[in-house]
Each structure stands twice: as structure tokens, then as C-alpha cells.
Length: 453
Ligand SMILES: Cc1cc2nc3c(=O)[nH]c(=O)nc-3n(C[C@H](O)[C@H](O)[C@H](O)COP(=O)(O)OP(=O)(O)OC[C@H]3O[C@@H](n4cnc5c(N)ncnc54)[C@H](O)[C@@H]3O)c2cc1C
Image 1 (tube, rainbow, N blue to C red):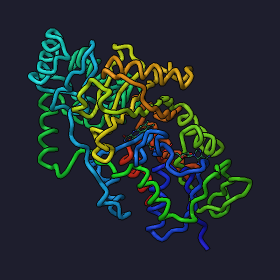
Image 2 (cartoon, rainbow, N blue to C red; image 1 turned 120 degrees about the vertical axis):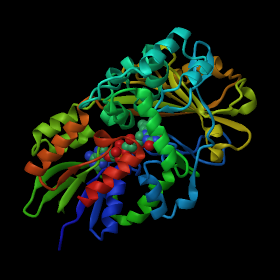
Image 3 (cartoon, helix red, strand yellow; image 1 turned 90 degrees about the horizontal axis):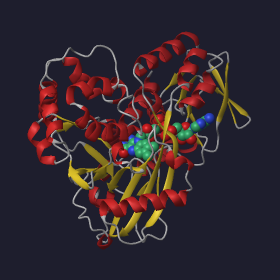
Image 4 (spheres, rainbow, N blue to C red; image 1 turned 180 degrees about the horizontal axis):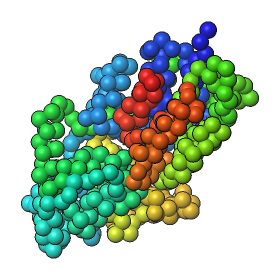
């Protein structure tokens, strides 16, 4: 009898891998260290808030133009529960006011002058600087570089620091100045690889996307993303072992042996969808260079505080999806998502649900604060930014070591990991947010690709 494929990690990557293997008719064992499935995808009730639904504790949506999650939802019978955000405008908090994010833009990079002028976010000098740079002919990007190295010279400091870093740095809880453009902003890398005018390249991208567009850019699931996790868990049934951490790997005649919970499981192959430091420990005896690369990946710490309060207690009109905060504003918060405006399924008509994020790789203040102080500080910042008047219910979700920081050369290092494992530890595959994309579609893509390999 063939040994099963063992999948280590029951986050979205491992679940997608295991599901794909089951669909192929393969034997599968999925090991999850925690007592629940989902990893960074989770939702739950907000105690004492009077909401008749659970609210996501991290990802509340996913890119629909990368179709992997949408397709998986359809396969799992969740297609009729896919929902689109309301499409409301997003803002930037800058110098005491919420200001429109100029549109059109690609990953936070605007390319037309008039919307920048109209946004009241960029000074006249910053707009002139942008106008002088965005059309200037540039050599095509070769290889990889940081987003800052590529874009600062093409848009100027103000646009970079007030628009691009808040968005791209926010997604990763990191710094756009250090983020690999290939790994963290592939669309921008594609535009930069064209060379010449950045405006022309971005316009062409937007035009092509509009021509190909069918449906919304983002989707979520009515009732929260954990529904996807629940459906995957149900499809896998007793193949899933929670509270069971993989502790050690050994070679065996037919492949691999996985030690977990004092027992050993013979495996034909092992898919490692655990965080990079865990995977590094497991593969170190067989692929030490790859283990060292994985162990060296830095992670950002984020905290997400969900506030619930009667809408009437906010001076701000909630006519948008939320706002981002540039680091120059010196707030603890990095973003505030107005979930009850962004998603119809989170709007009960009465309550405002505000999901406030803090934490960047270079700003770990919240890590050393008591939770009550984090809540107090962020509540105070809601008074400043949104005219909050009252005492909201707050739920704190800490996401320590949750967002991998891709540095230039990251994708090449992933290729080297794959090559070393193929050469020296055939049958071991590494997948997940720490490798080739941290958004849910990228994780599903990697999990399914690992299952197919
Ligand atoms: C606050 C926040 C907001 C986000 N928002 C969005 C969003 O809006 N849209 C989006 O697309 N993405 C978003 N993301 C990113 C996305 O949620 C994650 O990148 C993705 O869920 C990671 O999935 P994964 O399976 O690769 O890793 P994980 O979710 O980290 O799963 C790894 C699993 O391995 C388990 N494990 C660890 N050690 C062992 C072991 N020894 N044995 C067995 N199991 C082990 C862990 O318990 C965990 O369950 C967000 C992330 C965060 C933190």
C-alpha cells in the first residue's frame, strides 16, 4: 500500500494542498499544531457587541483577479456566498484630515496628475516633482530591487511616502523601501521592466485589466473567510489531526517518516506549509542551506483591534472603506478598515465595525505594550481621526510573527530552496506565505501546485 502524503500545517496553504491531493484520489494526513484549522485565517464573535454574526480576525477579503480562491470556493459549493466589497472610496489620514486616495492607481501608485491635485494629499511642489518624474524615460528594471529603489526615483518622495508605502508597507506590515518588488509587487515590477515612461506602462496595464475585467477586483465570503476553512476541514474529515505538531523528519526506504505527538507516520511525500522557522527546523538535517535561508526570513508583528460602536457616536460620515496612515503621522495605527461600510454583510444598520491595525517591521511599539494600553491608544487615535465620542467594545487579535518580509532576491532564494530539496531531499516540498506570495490566492496556488508536483 502506498504511504500517504503528509501535509504539515493546516493554514490555507496546507488545507489547499491536502484538498487537492484528496481530489486526485491520494491518501493524505494533515498535521496541525494548533487546536483549530486556518492559521492566519480566523473569525469569531465580538463579545458584548450585540452583533448577530462573527467578524474576521485577519483577512476579510482576497483578490478576485487572481482566481484561485474564487475557484476553490466554487468547487466547495461556496460560490453563491462570494460577495464583493461595496466599492466605497478609501482615504489617507494626513495632517489632520482624511484625504482621497487618487484614482486610478496600481498598487497605490497613481499615474495621472489631476487626481493627485484633487486629493489635497500631495503638495504643489510634490505634484510638480511627480509630474517631472512619472513620464521620464527610465531603463527597464533588470532582476530584482526594492520597491523604494525602483519607485522613489519615478514618483518622488511625497507620493512614495504618503501613498505607496502606506499601502504596500501596510499589506506586509513592513517597509516599501525594503520590500522586493518582484515578490511583493509583481504588477509594479512588470511595469518597471517595460522601461520608458512609468505612466505609459501603468496606463497600459490598467487598460489591459479593464479589457479583461469580469467581476470585482476583490471578493469576500458572506459571513467571513473562515467559511472557506470550515468547508476545507469538512472535505478533509478525519484526515486532519489538530493539536498534532510535526516534530522531526527522518528518511525511510519508501520516502519519509514524520514524527508527531510521539508517533511516526510513514509518508511518500511531505508538503511543509508551516511558518518558515518551523519548516527550517524540520528540513535542517537534510537541506541545511535551505533551512538557513528560511530561518533568516524576518516576520512582521501585527495587531488588529476590532472596535464596535453605535454609528451615531462617530463624527465621521463612514462614506468609505477606511483609511491608511503614513508613518510620518506618528500614530500607532497603520490602517483603519470601516468593515461595516466595506462589506454589506457586516452592516447591521446600527453599529460601526472598525478594524484598526498596528505594527510594522520597523515599528514594534505595540509588542511591548499591555493590551489595554494598545486599545486605549488606538481608541484615542479614533477620537482624533474619526471624531469618536464614546466607549466602543474592543476585541484584540495579536498576530505576532505573522507577515513574512520579502527582501530583494527573495524569489531567487525560493528557487534555490526548491532546487536543493529536489537534489538532496526529494519528496519534501515547501509552500506557503513565506515563499511566493502571502495573499490567500497565492497561498492556495502554492498549496495546489505542491499537491500536483
Ligand atoms: C492581520 C492579517 C491580515 C491579513 N489580511 C489579508 C487579506 O485581507 N487578504 C489576503 O489575501 N491575505 C491577508 N493576510 C495574509 C494571509 O492571511 C496569510 O498570508 C495566509 O493566511 C498564510 O497562510 P499559510 O497557510 O501560508 O500560513 P499560516 O496561516 O501561518 O499556516 C501555517 C500553519 O502551520 C501550523 N504549524 C506551525 N507549526 C507546525 C508544526 N510543527 N506542525 C504542524 N503544523 C504547524 C500553524 O499552526 C498554522 O496553522 C493577512 C494576514 C494577517 C496576519
